[in-house]
Image (cartoon, rainbow, N blue to C red; front, side):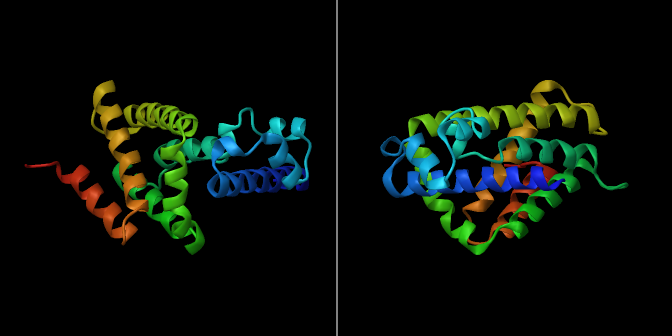
Amino acid sequence: MGLREEKKKKTRKAISDMATKLFIERGYLNVTTAEIAERAEVSVPTLFNYFPTKESLVFDDDAEQEQQLVDSVKNRKKGHSVYEALLDTGISHLDSLKDEERKGFKSFMKLIEDTPELNLYSKQMWLRHEAALAEALRKESKQKLSSIEAGAIARFVLDSYHRSLGATNPKAALRALFDILKSGWKG
């Protein structure tokens, strides 16, 4: 990545972090995009060059997350199953989180759950990610999967990632959830 792209990436992250912080502190509807732009030291048009909507300010890594999911399946290590690749991706993500990000997870999720606009955006984002992951699963799985099966597995994987973030021991929780996927539920 060149210097210009790196600067854009940092600016995008700074804008998103500022917006999310303000939304958590004061509420989504009580913060304007003009205020966010001012605090981030960019113009409002520049802010909208980086983020097409106010909601997208909170989900700055939406496209990267989706691409990472698909890439983890398509570009997995030789000899690794799709299952192993997805579990490794989840564990790597948990390892990459800083303590402050883990601590802020509950307030971040409360913001999303309490804000109808963000809740809707989040659900639409996860449905896009689910569809992209399901398609990758159908193409890459050794076992032939129907669209319904691939979609259900993709949803379970994404939900497992999400649920593990809120657990006391996120890695153990993720492994336990993936064990259900691997073994099947015998209940």
